[in-house]
Structures are given as C-alpha cells and as structure tokens.
Length: 150
Image: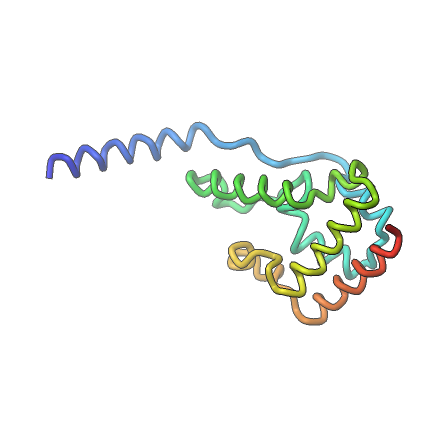
C-alpha cells in the first residue's frame, strides 16, 4: 500500500504542476483565413460550415472551450490542433502551390464524404459541427468547384 500511496502522490504533484505549464494557444488576430476565402470563394453557407466545423483545428485561430484550462486536456487539444494544421492549414493557404491546393481540396472532399472530418472527438463537445448530409453536399460541391481553379 505504501508504493501505491507514493505513486498517487507523485501523480498528483505532476498533475498540479501541469496546470502551471500549459501549451501555447493557437490564437491569431486579424482575418486569418482571408487569402483562402478570397481565392476559393465559398458561399456564405460554406463559410459558416468551415467556421463551425473546420477552422478551430485547421487555421491559425482556435476558439477554446472552458475545459482547455485544465491539464491534461489542454495538452490533448494542443496536439489535435497541431496535427490538424499539419494536414491542412487554411491560414497558410497562400503559401501552398497550385498542386498542393488541389490535393488539399481533394483530401477535404474525401475526408468529409467518408465522415472522417470533423473528428468525432470534436463533435462530441461541438454538436453544431456535426455535418448534415445537406452540409456535406454543399461543402463537397464547393470544394469540387474550387478545385477547378487548380
């Protein structure tokens, strides 16, 4: 029992320590998706879908929920955001070449159609990010039209 108590104390100390050393937040100022939206010209409906279901993890700005202030959740969210931006970063759109833009839109279509995006973990706490079939169709149609430019 002494070992279990020592382990519990060490874990508690680590957990408390994690509260003071949090990952950097993904927060931008200004219009962080302007270049992307100007170039791809999404409809107002698609803009709303992108804002609700995509931009938190795939842009330079995240609207954090209250529970992000609690470690280890803050670390878990930071990892998800970093991974999301690695795959597609709408804020970095202007730095992609035409071939990469086409490929990213192709992946967007595939992931949305297959129900892989937005992630289930995200939609658990962001119910409005669950896409209806109508929203999926609108997003896919827009992305196919945008791909024609590349």
